[in-house]
Image 1 (cartoon, one colour):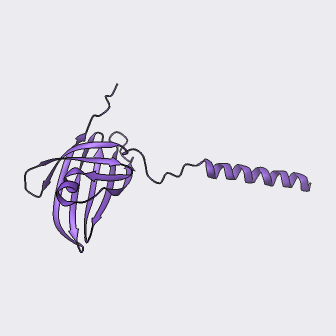
Image 2 (tube, helix red, strand yellow; image 1 turned 90 degrees about the horizontal axis):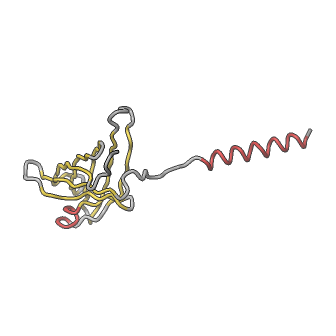
Image 3 (cartoon, one colour; image 1 turned 30 degrees about the vertical axis):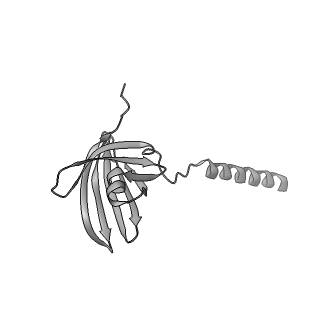
Length: 143
């Protein structure tokens, strides 16, 4: 009887361990990795400036924010909303800091389209705010 209980216990431990390790715990979804969006970025009320947002190495980079303001790529978080099955969308947020300033990106991706804001702040006060919108560069053709 002890032998049977021992075998059942071992089987239970193996099964529960394999279930635990079999689950994929993804720290960061790979959906955005290596995607580039061609956007127009404009400071509130001003003309669009051509830019690219690049998601690489789990960081978000804006060519404009890097070249004009010196912000390096910042880590992004990403969340899928599957409540609307026909038009799912994804939200993202990224923050990059430079000395006492930071730029915070927030946005929504629907299909191959992206839109959002980038806010530069210092000491918690927003200094500049930009809106952006655009499309995926080199989208894959649907069959």
